[in-house]
Image (tube, rainbow, N blue to C red; front, side, top):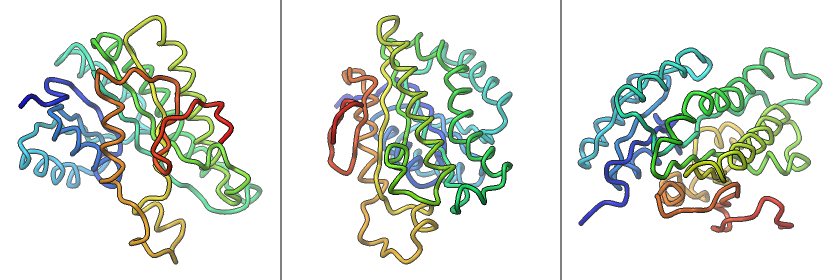
Length: 249
């Protein structure tokens, strides 16, 4: 039986745990060669073992997303090895400080935006030619409802603002690639999941009441398949449907 993503090259950021790990494993199950990017070498090696155990293949890319020169080098390395990139899942992000905006230190604000926004711009800048070289380049940016519902997320200002900026970045990239390439760009909102970030934000919550990254991952990977032609839209996991960005609900 042929695998839906056989011979596809997929880069996943934040691949060592949570959503990124689950997505990386799902991509491998469907036949993609996974380029797994994260800061922690040991966790990446554990992921590599799991991918190989299910018959998949991976290339490990230990990297701090704030090392923007390294992201440029990554694009060059992918070009030299494969001449293209078929899938980008831009998952990595941080919560940042949980406090009133007026109390957020500028370095903490800058750190959240460097990882949640600027790193994704630098990935687009580095990888756009490779995605365009694919017969069906697919990019999925993992967002949060906090970006569009900031009034319900008091004390999460840096995170909410950075996710709103990420949404705008992804929608701009979708518009710029729509009629000039085979690239399709989607935004995916996981909603509350059983992750370390969620636990740090809501420490009293029973994690067993939450859905898991492993449930979300197949939905993300479906957006990465060549036959998925949606672009510039939001996949909302809590309601399991694709929404036009201007959808009233």
